[in-house]
Amino acid sequence: MAHPVENVWDYPRPPALQPVPLPVEIVFAGQTIARTDAAWRVLETSHPPVYYLPPDAFIPGSLRPASGGSFCEWKGLARYWTIVAGDRTAERAGWSYPDPSPRFAALRDHVAVYAGPMESCRVGGESVTPQPGGFYGGWITSWVRGPFKGGPGSAGW
Image (cartoon, rainbow, N blue to C red; front, side):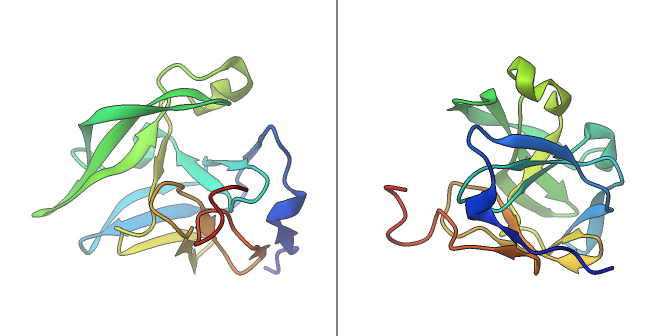
């Protein structure tokens, strides 16, 4: 299925929340640790979409609470997750919002995952590329165009 091209500079600020009409899956350590047809994505100016999966999309034991947290001016306080599969772990590779702002209430307890530490993250069967930089967790697909915040020289955007 061909996707319309999306330019991240056309995404809104404050961000928009959209249901994802495609299957989303995450593979780590040779295991499909999450799969869903009920993901959400957040679209924000200059960022590739961030995908949030419902907690029941993850296989039991693949999410362990991690230390620390962060604050998003739009979504609220985030908690972090360590991803576990077999004998491998990816520390603080996921995050969620236990009590998001009303605008993002649909994301309550849904988990976003950094694509970089995973073996593969896929949207509609297509493997994604991680957003540049170490903080943002967007997933870049063939139909999303940048430039993207997170790369060198983009800190002031």
